[in-house]
Image 1: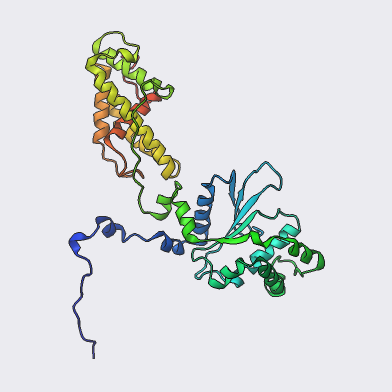
Image 2: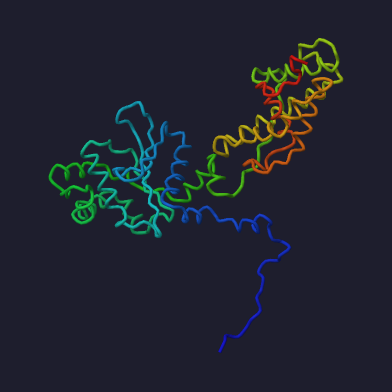
Length: 360
């Protein structure tokens, strides 16, 4: 006998469906997405976050076999031997961390600092996508009890596993070393705090896939020509000269006929410069340069064609740049028409575009 049939109901009105969700599926909140990471991805995520902190001059990733209990090593002053550093110990389990999950790691910390392999860290944080459980959270708040429990657990949880060669019994000197260590330095980093910090890094959009933040407002160009825009401005003046057939070397003397063009050119250059900064702050290296290359490749044939004057060449290149169909840039959705024009001026600033070729 088959079960009784029932109508299938649609919980969301189809007309209100998000096209992006239809193509890619509903977005996954970061606190849930980190649970889907692999061990390697989790370490990379923590590395990205720690590398963004101004507290550290050097952040290194040492996770893997032979790491001696150190995953993400964040150093305050690398030039100072045995200077202050913090360790972020990454654990990617399917449950909140319990005391039994950390004894071996704490054993490594004690044993290898006893051997002098590295100095005792300023802070030692456990970092797990599901955080720590109630029992471990309570234990981490009681350093003396944490130390006593480690000593009690040493024969079973640490001694047989610290090295592959032999057991490491808790002998007098090692025990004295452990008792002298400050266990108040040991704690945990809540996953929500890590996500909040990661949101401010240039890796967040790529790691979590929630899109780029809104762009800040673009400031107006300064009244005076800056050194970083001197070459494209010179090229603009050459294009105006070629159009009007008059000498022109000072931007303050741009004729009224072209003053609006000159003003818009500077505005678009600074708009593209702002996009460069936005890309640097929100995406890994290379995203903006990739956009520049797409625009360069899309307009170069237009820029190198024959024209009656340099200004005609310039305007034809800008028109082609605004008409390009850009489909593969990580900055899509944040690129304005002024950015496209501004990138042409950036490329002219590097002489990759020349509006008035010397050979005519």
